[in-house]
Length: 187
Image (cartoon, rainbow, N blue to C red; front, side, top):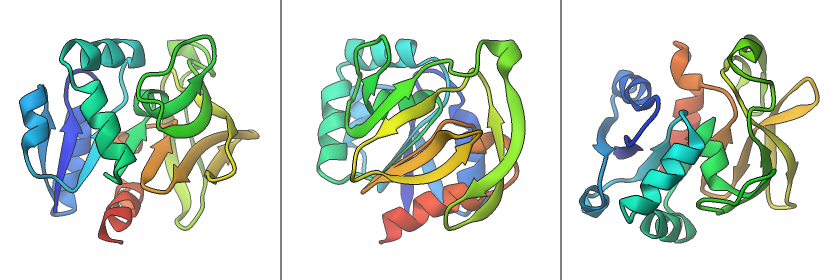
């Protein structure tokens, strides 16, 4: 199994390290030609969603990634990746717009509003959650499964081949959420 990790901006290296710990090969997607390589799933990392969206457009990768997801390519978006996948974003135009969710950017405030907690993740149990300038999901369509909430706000969800987390599982040593994504690919 091989995972492509979007590497135009953000915390992509941390995802690559966790995948390596799980015995899964990965490579960085930096330009359109990288999308021609063979891969089984895609990770959209945390970072700055506006910058990532702009770069995906400038590098002419947005439409090809969107098409791949719509055709069933499994994708895991963390923090900014959640925002990239959201069909609706509060006070902003969508980027990929493939997941039927309404995302709220910087929902917990700026950098000083960052925090760490443990909370229940459906199908896994208690997991560590690191929130850095994190979004949350304000609402989700009927085909979206809610996987985790913190303080009444949706922070993880799944719609078919798409998995999102408002937090950064790649910043903890817990491999279970990445393994959950790999299970989506295996099925």
